[in-house]
Length: 411
Ligand code: GLY
Image (tube, rainbow, N blue to C red; front, side):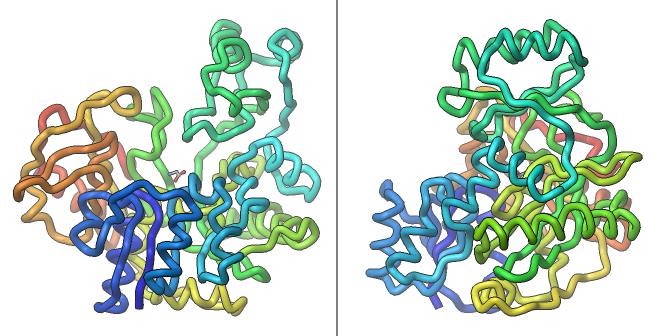
């Protein structure tokens, strides 16, 4: 069997490793991939447009394409593959807008009664400031497009609001992604990520995850792609699961049917658990990174069967190990702003599984950093504490100059 995996992070390395663990022999292709994926499959080296990827898949008889990164989804890659009758897992372009177009997503949530924080939309700087003058300056200001994960600014006072609105609506720092802003009520609580598989009829949730998004400990500083995760999320109690089912999942499913947005792929609910119930902050229409790296080591079921069940529109029961998983991300100095690369990494060759390469390459038998997020180190244990201890022990085995990690993952 030949599988093509699209993306270049630890998530794509984790998808590849899980498929090989389940199946042992399988030919994996990655585009663009990273130094880790290159060890378990073949990275496609030249630059491919979505159509060229499709032609590559056709010519090389690829049996299945798995889309990791949203970038491909928002280029409409699923529609192109579908036109060529090639098997691909992920939403078509119209459904991918649930992630790519925040205004579309919020309107969808409002229309179908998916519980979400209150919001207003503005394209005029002054009108947005006037609105804040009469409400509160404690809000999330979000660009209409996803802006490579950078379009969410949390503000707490007039100056911060001015700065954020100015950079989006006047200085156009986010380009077209910032043509409009959503000003959203800032909720206090605990975040949770629930990734699920959608088969066009049912949304089947995976274990819950807690993502640590900020660069600094205690959730301070800039947003990142994710600096660590624990699974399961300790705040997802059975009552919260029931609330999620009733107020988020079921109305989402109804909306997907009625808007004819059904698809075969992953849907990720970015949630806030508050004292007034669970709220949906955002949809992603893909697997999370580093949630995937934290989830897959606990997944007993065969990933390919899960994907196939989605394409076949069949319900599948997913089996999990009754353990805890903790992922610590090692990053380069400067990340999530401009970061250093080219540092020699010591210790990878003696690491025990599971671990994933996010941004490193192998040159003449040496591992070298090549991106902002470099490594995902995973601990699995009978408690969060044990899982965390194993993950941080792995951190102690790795060294590269100026490396950074959060010391509070799992606390
Ligand atoms: N970890 C957050 C994301 O994948 O978007």
